[in-house]
Image 1 (cartoon, rainbow, N blue to C red):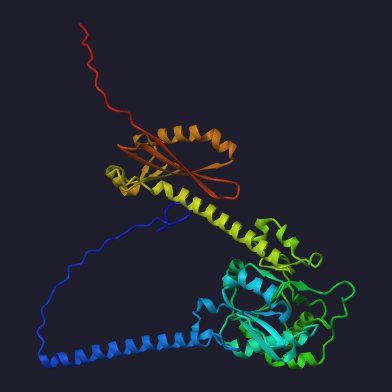
Image 2 (tube, rainbow, N blue to C red):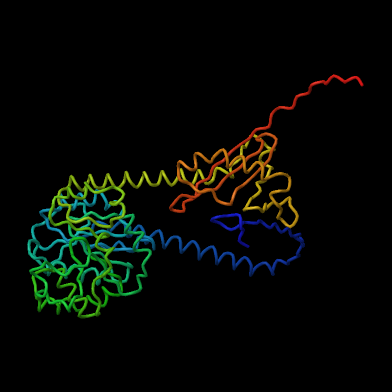
Length: 448
């Protein structure tokens, strides 16, 4: 049953059911207990074996974490299998761009983050790196490296994650927004998402695209769902045999469209969700963004200089902390009307009554409903609204028809008024009118 008193939540009623348990004494012979003991012993052994197996499985994952081509998905929980991200980089940038990514947004990545490089000199790094053996490290444009990375992701992790990201090493990812965004989309569908593009003015009509079907720009990141990656991966080699342009992102878009008939997302909001600014490659443009707007951006590209990666990461963290603190204060304000003083037992036992327009809802009233005219409840409410009227006009708040009232000896007459602003956010105000002390004065009798 939804209460007419609550602007947000239904009225919660607790029903306590007391049952009388009947205790019986059962007599059991020694032979009758034997099957029960065997059953209990079997269950204990089964549970213990499962626990030992899980311990062995996780320890085995930890032992092999330093191998060249490791598979850590056996150590992942369901929440950690949300997304697998492949970052294309080279040995030249492992200690700068890749290391900066791993120290900033990579620490909070909601899945697995791996850096992909080509063949070259031996390297010594603690970063999770995969060497693609059939492509050179310095090859540019990186068409083959990008396609080989996607083939590797499909072959080794295609069934382990819901989503897959193709990223460059000069990108910053808002991991909180990424997780929120991906968990709101059905990963069982064929999805090819990113910053939609049709090429520059000179390139339009010469990229081999099908009409005005956009491709996803590679710089701001490309998101592929598991089903579409598994469908496209076997055709990547054939798509690479007949390229129209040297751009790997347009060729990926052409391949996806050829195999699945899907193009990149067309909605304008994805242009702002996956930000790209090719005029300022170092990343200063991202740091100068409005922090509130930056918090609504999923990826920033390009941010080539490590210093701007750290500055942007700091800005995102500070703004996130600020919003969480504001939300905490809002929750405290909303909870304050129902918080009572633990030191006053009388106040704790007094219940709040809800006032909606001219009706009062209370457990003390007959049929749980009464009128505000009864017992003069409307008088106190009118005086409270009158006292708050100048402040509410200044803040441009509207008084709702909903209010709460309580009368107790320690706290007097208390009201909680519910107001709304222009954005329909709720704001509550609590008032208290204490009772004066009772005093006695002897009156002189008048003579008749």
